[in-house]
Image (cartoon, rainbow, N blue to C red; front, side):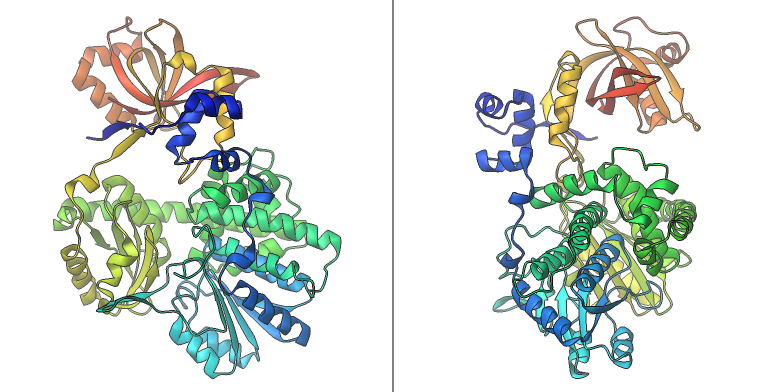
Length: 596
């Protein structure tokens, strides 16, 4: 059973309301997001370009810019090595277009998920050496690639690392020791001695900061105004896309990047991105983090999972509309196939969890040998959502066992994996997600046992907590208030949609909608007797079971067949209000999130 908790954080809400011309309820929500003090509130509500942090605050940023500008002047060949997910693709594109705009001789290599695995590997280094590459610049990877970087240095190459992942470490008697690669420059805000004020940026934003550092140098070649303006626009657009898809918190600088980037994305001049919006039918929409994370991003990820991520990079480099639409259509088709394969994988995982001893573990380790290894992370995420536990999904790779993990808030996945790193041939990640490789199937069970033996999660850590912003009567949610909520956008990780709660809500009538009859629409009334439309997108079967157990089958039948008298079914609910636009009319709609 979930625990409902009302936020009780203190502040002078009336003063904040008056100063910033917002309602006291909005002021309370902002405080609930841990935004404290006039400077932080101003930044939250009105943050723009002037509030962005200078690239030079990041350790080694100036050194990296020096090195790359020197290589551009000398006409040296630069290879950008990215990653096959959305963040890696966006980071690669940003660096490629930025360095080329400054006259650099640059190309790219994105690892193949199946053949190469994540990030730098020896074969990519050998290939770069064979191609006569002078300088390697990594993006969204490299911080954990010390052996590969050592090989590149031995072959006479210059290496600049740009990354945002956790720095590998060892806990020794004298304390924690961080293991940095011996590159010529290492740009990663997660370095313990990096002074950058906000550490939670994605790889594409780190790449954009480097391009900005290059362009802002007085001795840098000056690109044509039109090229520079497009570059500025695309750094925000692709930075926003990567920030959402890499599940970065929408706080501080990230909030500014996503807000501006999504606003620019609708009218993007990038033909490939425009084609991707078109084939998904969202080219005329006001874009939100939902569209970035659940429509555009999955199409990009699908090419890295089932084909090669180079296709997505080709899409964004496309200069011909027909070519762009063709590639975008292929990516959408790949994503449709990925959805079907994911559903099958989730079903298999659930059978294991519910039909074996695995389900009793605090950390779920599921082995799906025949699952496409690129889908392990998505399946792990779905299983985590279902059971509320950290989950690793392992699959049979071309060499040994590959796996991906997705975590819960109370469990730092990367640190817990470090405690049993002797089992892995490779591993990496951060608090909420990680990847790993094992030598053989025998190691899969060893890993399951060891990760659970080390687990310190308690019963309370698994208890779902529903955070209520404000217990608020439905009557407060008028059109003016709902429109005022938009000042809190964009919503996402770290800045969720506000959640309100009210008891004593009477259900009057109900009907089921949608192709699979899995959406419930209801007429409800509150203590004032005023009627509202309410919609529920959650598990409708579970909701019906709750109503039947609490109020009887007869009341449930009447709800869907003819209607109830006020007070026959009364529930408490957590909700947010919205405006539903239909057939030229707009109505206030209450969206139920939880019930009791």
